[in-house]
Amino acid sequence: MSESLTHMDALTADIARVESLDSGKKLVHLIDREGDSIGHMRTLSSQGICWLIRGKEGHRAEWGGDTRKIGEIADDLPFIANGQVGWKGKKANMEIGETSVIITRTAKAKRKDKNTGRRVKVQPGVALTLRLVVVRLTNTHGKFIGRWTLLTNVSNELTSAEVARWYYWRWGIESFFKLLKGAGHDVEKWLQRSAGALLRRLLIASMACVLVWRLQRAEGDDNAAAVS
Image 1 (cartoon, one colour):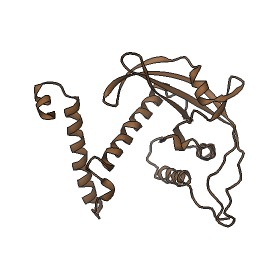
Image 2 (spheres, one colour):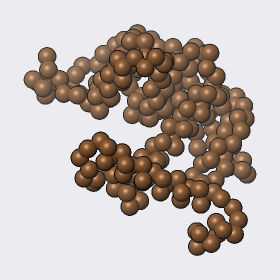
Image 3 (cartoon, helix red, strand yellow):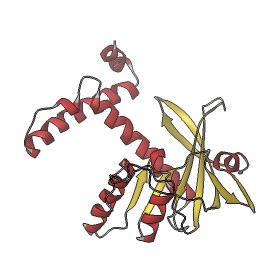
């Protein structure tokens, strides 16, 4: 039966292709909130693929004998300070909490069958026991400014602090992509046809971004003169 691919179907296929390249390293695939799809989590896990996904706080999981929303579980976790990170041009304090949760919900596929035009039926599956790593961000005055609820199937050999930093760096990469798409660079409108030409222009744009970032973060009279 032929079915159209959703965004997550296509992403899962891309992940499988990357895994087939046999890089010699154990890969962990980082996905934002659109990755909180239990059907795709089960598919990736069944193939031995490691992933880290930002979970949606309204989705439910089993914890402590009850079924609760991820956000409610996060509210009740103890947190440990884990240093500072850069956040929107300022310093932010990072606190981390972790627990184990079990997800049993059925998969509700968004794709439709091409023959009938109807949505594919719900798909029950195995329960997934996952690590829930919650990251709280506060400003230098202790005011809450953000939270990430991260679900992952990576082993406990990797600390929650490592998992949190992975997502933090992913966020920075995403911000860089957003900058390349706008801010005068408009990468999606480039007309270069060869990989070499595209790479050269990408390097020039990247260096321009790095220069601006260094000016923003530098201190002193020379920096003030350049910015003004």
